[in-house]
Image 1: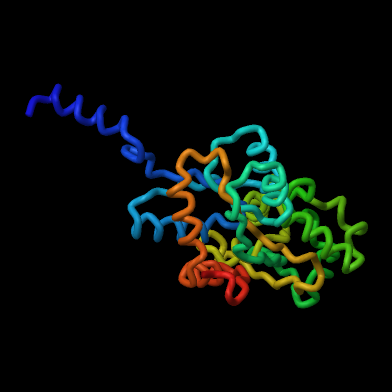
Image 2: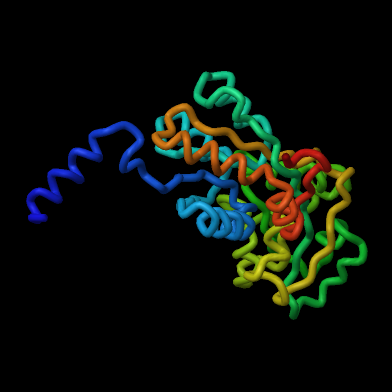
Length: 258
């Protein structure tokens, strides 16, 4: 067969529906999912041959980007409000809304820190603490949870001048790991990740001290690869992937995965 004839055959096939469809899914993912999503995406690719391309950031920033036409297939948010706003605006695929997990926050310090964490959030008032990293509460759900927990402990007004604001929870964690902050309020999913495990100590903030960090995802109506997006969403819902999320510190309700 001549090369010219082969090229013509390929061009002809690609003109048919469902042929030469992209095998890559672009995912906007909350920064707390950085390591869990890599794990899940790798398993999905191994099982299906399809690639998931995650981009991590602040859920609030992603909301604005999606409203302005950013080309994502799926949005994994660190709260429920943003996916619901997109759903209400008709920007999501009907029936795709799914609450996949609940996040947790911890107070994290580097291994060489002498700060005593036994008092929990109150340790942030220690005179040795000069800089406290939190995610920007204006658009990051984890930052909003951190502020709520500090207000619950009646320490927010006393320490707010020490805040170093991360654009998202991943950048917040990097501030503490790098030494740019003495302590940080970060996602448990990052504290147990390979990037931070063994580099510091943490104590969980009791769940009753901040509003639940319920997280949900939606498939976007603008997706150019809806079939693969639905396939990935179904994969995320499986009990095996629920176990993966739990292994990264997320809480997944029994019966949520199916």
